[in-house]
Amino acid sequence: MHLLYPLIVSAGLFSIGVYGLLARRNVVLVLMSVELMLAAVSLNLVAFDVWLADVLRSGQVLTLMVIAIAAAEVGLGLAIILQLFRQRATSAIDDLDTLREPR
Image (cartoon, rainbow, N blue to C red; front, side, top):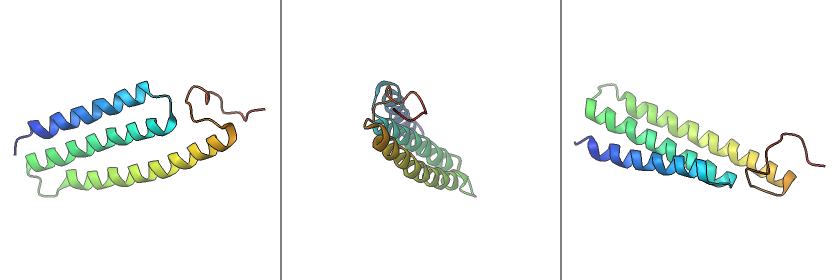
């Protein structure tokens, strides 16, 4: 298997994720961008695991851990976003610059 193809796809996914993280103003879209970046990392882990022919399959095990952490991050992130939206009635990042409750 050629290593170049998964690395190009992974670099594209990671670049799209970084662009979404820096350019978006909606908290949900920023969370989706972080998920794209984690998917790129997972693709790299599996590609290098196959390329190195690891007997222990360390890359695939780490990918499963990344997927579990990403699922927990989405659950907690969405719960925090929903609570912020209930309190502030906005999901724009610029409006969420302080931690104190609005008056």
